[in-house]
Amino acid sequence: MELNERALLVGVDLNNDDDFEKSMDELENLTEACGYEVAGRIGQNLKTVSNAYYIGAGKVEETAAMVKATEADVVIFDNELTPTQHRNLEKALGCRVLDRTQLILEIFAQRARTKEAMLQVEVARLQYMLPRLAGRGEFMDRQGGGGVGTVVRGGGEKKIVLDRRRIEQSIAALRRELKDIRKDRHAQRKRRSESGLPLVALVGYTNAGKSTVMNALVEFSQKPDTKKVFEKDMLFATLETSVRRIELPDNRAFLLSDTVGFVSKLPHELVKAFRSTLEEVK
Image 1 (cartoon, rainbow, N blue to C red):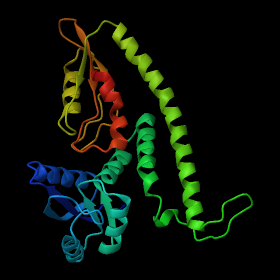
Image 2 (image 1 turned 120 degrees about the vertical axis):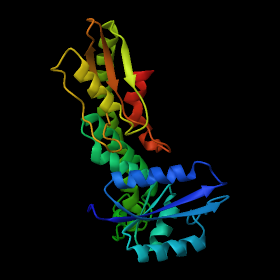
Image 3 (image 1 turned 90 degrees about the vertical axis):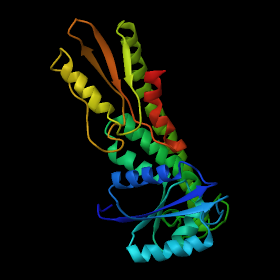
Image 4 (image 1 turned 30 degrees about the vertical axis):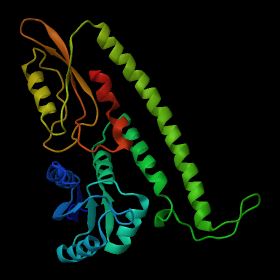
């Protein structure tokens, strides 16, 4: 993805939701965090979303015109789209379409640095992909016929079945790796608990300043050799839990955890990516 790609943002205000503008502002921040340039925003008030396009037919035409006028490369929707809505929108708008879940997945993929974070993001991406295989060009195969012992059906349909099986096998393998990593993390957490030191966790919205607070306390600590955590003014700079021992001037100490930040409308596929945070604060 080129950094100068232009994105048009689209949202639906269902039943005059008081948080609609806040959600759209957050979508704009997420879009910029992913490296896109925001070309404009479109909103629509609806009582129910369209099964075919999510937005109404008239708004689809307005959005298509806006895509041309702003020279947008991609249209990003503030909610998760169904496979049917996604296909219909890309056909009607003539450009790439992303939903909020895909956008957050892109950000997580860019930010992931530890093995656990990278594995969890890949699991989330594959889980999101599974119900969207049918009709997607990258998974269709034009070959026809059937081999010995197979059901004769269209080549594209057979390819989807094979892709689904491969993805499910990949998810199972990734989960086994994650299980081993979490066993190690559980053992580390048990040792920290047995140390008798108080445990303190920094919890809050993404980019609220948790890592900044931790680094300030690390500087204040009587252990100047303690390594600081990664700190940057952007959404989801932190995708894993970091723990530091903070030494106080009166010779007392505590363990401080910097955790993954939260965001509204977090995709179901990524909830488990926050598992380490939840385990640290429970």
